[in-house]
Each structure stands twice: as structure tokens, then as C-alpha cells.
Image (cartoon, rainbow over all chains, first blue to last red; front, side, top):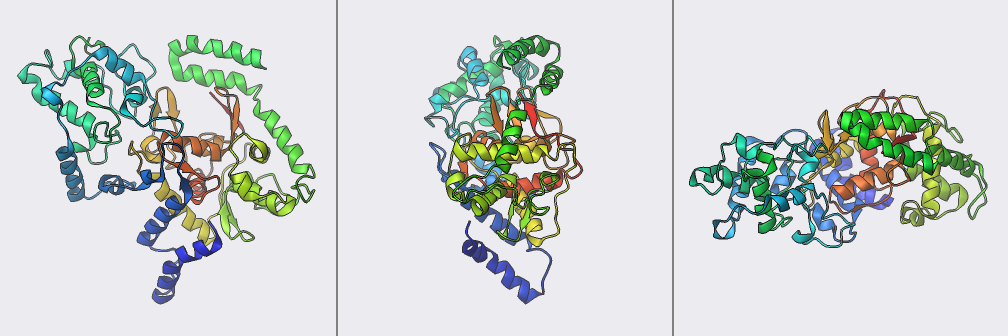
Length: 216
Length: 261
């Protein structure tokens, strides 16, 4: 950044400072603006990763601080997220857990070194953050363990109407994780087009199919 | 060296079955005896003293914050404010400023050179040398200049800034104690994560790809995995993050250059 640009950016603070009597640091809201300006000036397009990825939506913006957003804002984020969920065609929620395991293992996709942003070229990155199949010891701990996910929730048959609430909750969590926690660390796999319906069905099977190794 | 590394790599899966994290720590310990970072350190020292560039000068008059030519102790006080450039600079961007001012290199051209190539590779070697000269010293970044304090505040906001297709910020992975991605331990960078951890461990030699990484490349690859666009070398956001992490690490012992998986 050249000096002129930096002066432009500092001007409002310097003015406020001279009017209000000089404080030792610019006020918080001014720093917020300066930080966004610094971010916009610091990144450039590379491959599929364009600078428009820095344009925040309500949830990203509200969850960009050490403290959570006010309850009414969190509620609005969750309501919008819930309304965004696209339920699967034909009410078919469950695919093939074997394919789901492969997706869960696959941490690729959406970086500037990936050639394509298409869902078919993305993994789910699930093991990066979650324990899932117990045989896989290389798992992350940012998210909760999903070992025995369906079993612990009493899912004996994912197609049974009695299972529908947990089946729908799980679909919603995968589609848009912010539906149930405004600032969830988990990506919004359906909502952001990271995974398609069939891929999500396969992850659903990994978690909920009683035959899946997750539920043994 | 390669034969030794391959032999050691062969040990890892066996240890991973016992206890993955312990195994990796043990493996790193074994590698410390022969850290290839020392080769970069030696090359960096030679580059520091060598007359180079259009002006045919060495870097021995470069002020890294403790006066012209003072190398020891400089690393653990960076990033800091420099009056001659009018901005806060981290180690690597400061080295490039000195290469331009003293040796006549084109700073913008170096900043646009891919990591590991041409003068960028020399910057990494120089950074390794300067960091190694502060080994076992404790981080103590200055915060006396208003711009240093402002950059800490900007860095904090950059750290928590969520964006991209995965909604990630630095804090998604580095905001809590005791978390991992796969088997990789993640330092909590919102506070002092401990001696030789996080900011106090880079530059580092990466065994997995045989590369020497400075903090700029470390941050660059974090942002790649964060699914963000590409951060400019020495850009304000990256330097501000350095201030945030460095100030938070106050009192942490530097082990740079370290060795990583």
C-alpha cells in the first residue's frame, strides 16, 4: 500500500482525533473499517479463489469477532439458514455409506490450487474435524465425535418415519450448519454448493445407515 | 541426508499406532540433530555479508529494528514500526526493503516472485539466518508506537475475519486450546501458546515437502487452506497478523528455525 492510500485511510480517524481531543488509538468502529480495507487491499485473485470470497454475508460478518453476536442477530442468522435448506428430491435422504466414507476422507477442494470449484471435485473434509469411523485414527477434534452417530440417536431404520426428525436435522446440518448454531465452525456444504445432493445422501448414509461402520 | 530422512519416515507409522502425537513429537526430536534448516541459515548468513545487487552492497548496514547491522535479538521484536518506510514491517518485508534500499533490488518484483524462486528463495534463507540469531530468546514485540498498537488491533480483526466458501477465519482452527486437524495439533494463537509453538517456531523446515518456509509462506498456505484468495507477500493483513501473533506470544521462547513434519 502506498503512502497516499494509507493517509486517505487514516484521515477520518485523524479528523475525529483533532475534533474530539486526541485519544491514544482510533475508536473500535474506525478500526473495524480499517481492517476491512486492509483485507480488501491485501488479497488478489488466484485460480478459482477470487477476491469476491472476501464479501461477507450477514453470518460471516456477525461471527467475525472473539465474542458471539447478540442473541437477536444469532436468531436471524439461524432463521435465514433454516429457510435456505433445500430438501432432497423425492424425499430420498440416504445414499451409499461406502461413498460417504470416501467423501469424508477427502479433504480436497475450493483452494486456489484446485482446478475446479464443481461439487463433484470436492471432498467433505469431515475427518479433518470429526472422529467418524472408529478404525480411522487420523481425525481432527474441532467438531464433536460422530462415532455411533445414528446408533446413539436410536436410528434402527433411516427410512422409518420415526427416524424422520433426526434424518431431517442431519440433512439440515449438512446443508446449512448455521441453521442450528449461527456461528458454527462447520462449512455450509449444500448452501454454498460445496457438495451436491447425491454426495450429501452418501454422507447421510455414513452417519445414519445402521449398516455403516459408524454405527457398529 | 535423504537416506536418513527416508529411514526416519519409515518409523512413523509404527509409532503412530502406539500414540500418534507422541510418535510425531519423537520423530521431530530425532530430526533436530540434523535439521536441514541449518543449510538455509548458513546460506542466509553468506547472503547477508555478500556484496550483491545493482548497487553491489551487502546487507550489513540493514536496520532490522535494533540499529544498523544488529542481527541478534532482532527477530523476537518483529514486526515493528520503521520510521524510514513509515510502516510496521515483519522480518521478510523488512529484508526486502533493505535489499531495495541498500542493494538496489526491485522490492515489488521480489514480492511478486513465487516462494522458493530467485530472490524470494534468498529472502527465506536470510530470514532463516536472522531468526536463528535469536534462537532461545523470548518474544518481546514493541507496542510503544501508535502504529504498532493500531496494527495489533487490525491483526486481531483479520484473525477473526470469516469469509470464503467454507466460512473459515484463522480463529476457526487457532482460537481454542487442544484442537487438531487430523493428527496435527493446532496452536491457540489468541494467546501465548507456549515456548517454540506457533509464531515462535517459524521459519521452519518442512520434511514432508523438503521446503524451508518463512512466516509469509506459512500464512499464505493457511489462507490457501482457508479457501481464501491469495494474500500478497508482505501485505498489510499478513503483517498485522504477525503483530497479533507476535504480541500474543510475548515471553515465548523462539526455537526458529524449527523442523516440521
